[in-house]
Amino acid sequence: MDKPFPAGPRHILTYAETWRGGGVERVQLRLARGWIAAGWRVTLVLGDPEGPLASEAPDGLEILPLGSGGMLPLMRLLPDIVAERRPDVIFCPGNHYTGAAAWLRLRLGRTCPPIVAKVSNALGRPDQRFAVAWAYRRWLALHHRFVSRLVAMTPAMADEAADAMRIPRGAIAIIPNPPVLPIPGATPPVLPGGRFILGVGRLAPQKRWDRLIAAVPKLADRDLSVVILGEGDARAALTAQIAALGLGHRVHLPGHSADPLPTIARAVAVVLVSDFEGVPSVLREALSLGTPVVTTGSSVAVREIVTGPDLGTVLAAGDEAGLIAAIDHWGAPGQPRPAPVPQPGEGAADEYLRLFESVIG
Image (cartoon, rainbow, N blue to C red; front, side, top):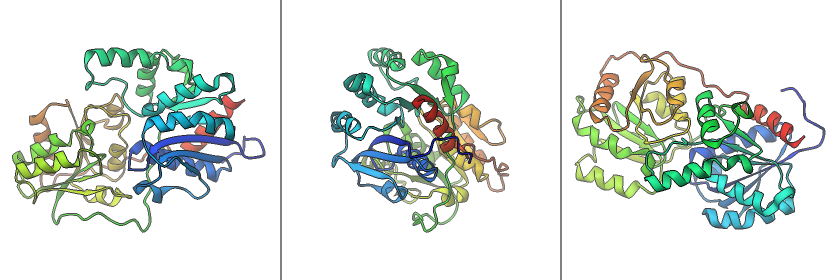
């Protein structure tokens, strides 16, 4: 990497609620690894330090554990920590965390360091009722008042953010997430024998794994299993659904996987049935390994990833018949797999550092 940065370590402060296994926090740790390697100091204010992502924390990361998860403790303590530590820049890792960024700006005023925030999830939320959706749109329109620079992961997401947040399109940086790399020595999940369809993501209502489970009895290949890697609050409901449908022998929930890449490579196809997403990294990971995907159009970025029918199938969120037909198509024995598509974002950490330097200056 070029060395356009001044001598002496700059200081980035970022924050998270938990290490229970969210994609936003995984990306945050990958970026932190790159920033530390470039000689920057990185502090992570962390609500709950327990969880599977603890093993992915890079050497040199300064961790300030708060002892409990949740946004309220984080928001209450963050301004005092920032005032004491005096970082050069604040990195807000995703939409979920911009409330803390707004509170930080309000509390610290002119003494608040510049805040760089990443758009990590869809800004259009089909799960919201009218009143909530109206309030959410109003909230998004306020972001230009407390965010110094905004980062989107694809051009389509930048267009969406410019419209929703009333930020000039040219003021939004486009930086892909750094690619997921294999983790040597990671414990593999327990997998069924034979062929399987794979889902990867939190067990959360947003992901709508119930749709995938409901499709299993209607698949043409009765020997095709389903594996869903991830953990979350919806486990009990999904387990009950699997039992009610008598699918305990075909649907498997082995939990969080530190390195899902070998499992993705083995899968017949990767299926994503979410209501909404940001830029689904699992689609990029699957296609980089030549594994086809079946996905809902859960984000404006999906069509930027699945660019043709040779890579996979894009469906409407509630298209049950289309979901079954797509899995039957890609799950048919002998179905050709797509040519691998390289993941972008190799230099993402350095691109962020150049952006940080510009807002610090």
